[in-house]
Image 1 (cartoon, rainbow, N blue to C red):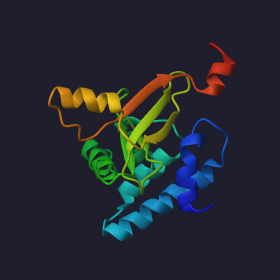
Image 2: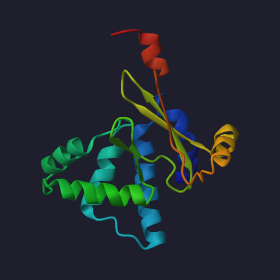
Image 3: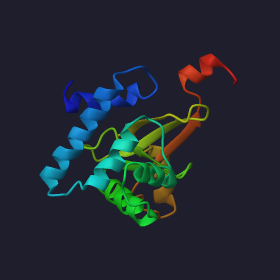
Length: 169
């Protein structure tokens, strides 16, 4: 599976069975390629943080990442994790999920996009897709009050199909 194909298929895959190993390898490869293209350095700690976030589609908080870094032999200092996360977010490899104060790997790192996150309240998995265009209603409302929208992120909480079928736990 090519990186481009993997990226376009990922929004639908987060809540479905898929070859997650290939999914993670494809996104890590895309991150390496983009760093090379952009003249960026994916340091060992940055790569490890991205690897941790690529383990699943579940978000991780900064302190969980810090703990995993310590278990992997990296310095267990909050600035280490936060600097790596800042780099990954700034360069589009990772997103911060505001609602739950956690981070997920971006499944479309080559696209400049406005992410839409579907967060399962039960299993905590996160599916990412993108809004190719902003809501006309939101645009109208913003213009009406003189507000210039520069970036939009949508976070929707609910139940994924598997959790909905499984019923209350």
